[in-house]
Length: 126
Image 1 (cartoon, rainbow, N blue to C red):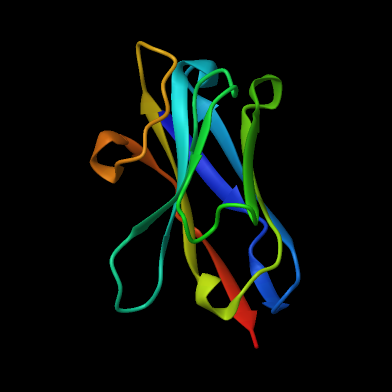
Image 2: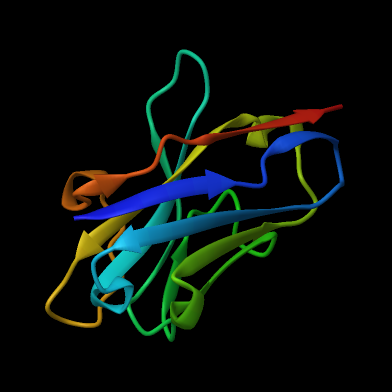
């Protein structure tokens, strides 16, 4: 098990940027693929971005591709989500998740993740 703590959320205006961080503790973080998901009120949890163990491969939802960048620093046990050109529809609680994997793959489906953080709120005003 790894414990995950998100930070960096806040209230911003459309067009602004935010960088979320997901700090991990517990197990060897470099054995885990990591993803970011978001959930707006009244809506299902939605995949945002994911990164493999080594950080060499990523995957994005179409709605954020070109605006968001996921990265990781295994030496700091931290994964980041850089969010640029934010839109009101990006408003949601953002969660990071970690999946123990035997191969260096990107994981994009929520049920595959065993460990979840508590979330950080991102609100984008128009």
